Image (cartoon, rainbow, N blue to C red):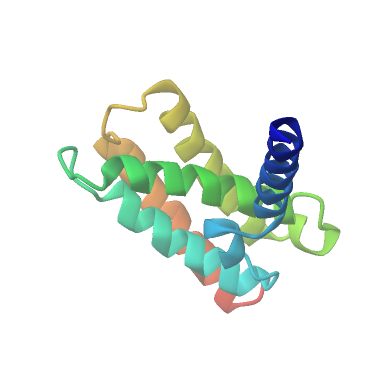
Length: 134
């Protein structure tokens, strides 16, 4: 009898873990499929994350969130031919690569001022391109 309950418990546990992994939990639920809206949302999210002070308690969570958003956004739009040719996509892709590279190489260091300025310039270029539909 005990062996039956153990197997039943293991089966239920596997089912729960499997089904919970299939849902769009967290940030991936924020990617809507509307390129313009998603791009503006990710830019705003990353601006907030980049501007956090080094000693902010929510910095680690925001950094993990940013990495997930970058991954979700890139995965969604990289192979979309209608989007990947736009100037706004190439510019935002460059900015996302710079942020992801910084997080991979220097996870405990703040963004250098020069990189912050470059990212802000690229974000403004993307916003302007989205306004004109490019």
